[in-house]
Amino acid sequence: MKHTVELIDDLFLLFINDQELLDILGIKDKTNIEDCNRKIKRVLESSDIVDDTLETFFVYNFIQSIAYTPNYLVNKNILEFRLYGHNRPSMNKLYIRLKTLLKENYQEISVITEGAFSTGSNGFYGYMFRVRPFTWS
Image (cartoon, rainbow, N blue to C red; front, side, top):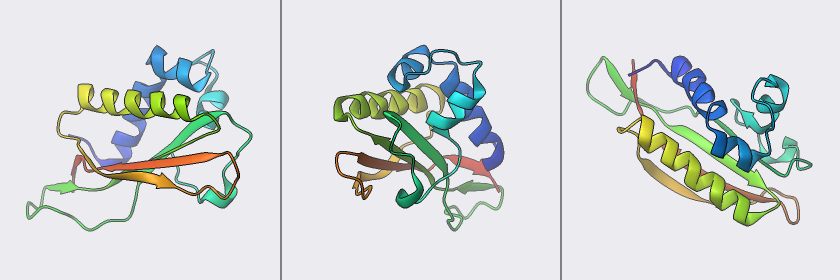
């Protein structure tokens, strides 16, 4: 179990070290942190400022939430992922790979809600899902 700030960075390392995910995102060199940060963003952005010139990418971070457990040591905060792209099959692959990585590495994480959302840009799709990992209070 991690603190929320630790989990965000641990997930980033997990993501950039997964070749299948890098292939889906079109990242050729995982040491190119600028490219990784453009396609794997650790900040939630509103749809009106999202860069719709990128083919496929995602953003993730914890959203404001109230502690969900009566245990004063543990929280179940809400971690949101927003997937963006012009190509729905690539987005489907991205969604499945992210969920697989989360389940393989964090068994306590489960999806609590998901669904499509409007990006405000024609032919540019958005899909989000939220998970509720255990984190330290």
